[in-house]
Image (tube, rainbow, N blue to C red; front, side, top):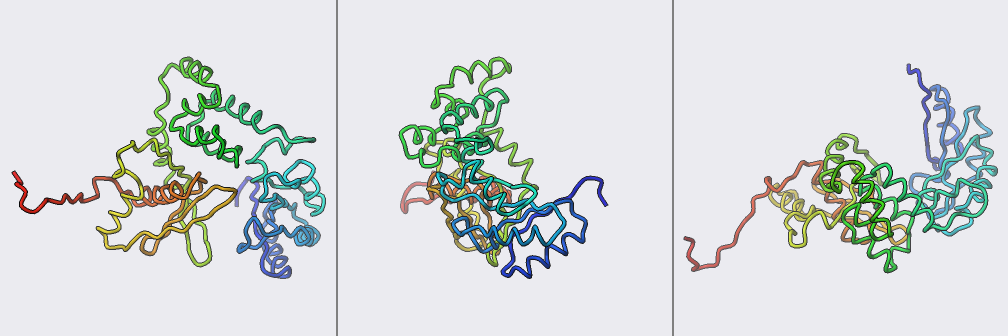
Length: 320
């Protein structure tokens, strides 16, 4: 037994009767509340959310139900507003509502009225990021979610090419504020690459498993930052290390599978009997594959020292 409330979250099963049976079983376990996503595990964000089934669950159980899945995959949809989310909540008669993508794209959905202009939101976010010294990888990922298709603009391309927190702040006209804050903290600009490696190492055991069909994927949040690998250091890239490791261990060619959402990409890679993927969305397919390879490299503890680097000697050339 535990002394804190325990909640659970489910997706709909293929039939309503099976869903209600599962809800009754969960209720008998003594959970404090239950989140219900209005899609089955096979359905994706573009599939409609079944608010009627969530309503049936609410009326079936005495548990507080948290409705989920009401956001639209179109970030500009009326559903992704305070009014739209409230209508979804009321339609399900749930005790509360859980919001993910709509809030990632514009957190002002939590206030009544119209959503805030996204550039205002981005500048407010950078204010917090500078004040509380957020790490580069987290800031870049969050701003990617806020920008959406704006990443294809000149501003977006300059943003995507950033490799440090200082770079990000300069792009949005906040370089001076960032430098002043860093001076107050008594140090030079944060070494983002070393920081992100430290965080990834500490959180390695916190990886999650996600089942996609019959495939079980080990996932981590590992954004790929090209600037951390040097302009002419292709041998350091995660895909290179993973490919050479696979060949040396005779595991076959790593196989990549791509997922796309709102012009962003993430991938998973299969090596032997294991699959790995990054939870971070990237600006293109190449970066998405590098992100997936990075997760595999970290989980398998692959380093350059593990690779036997073969050098080709031209026939007849002096070896002295």
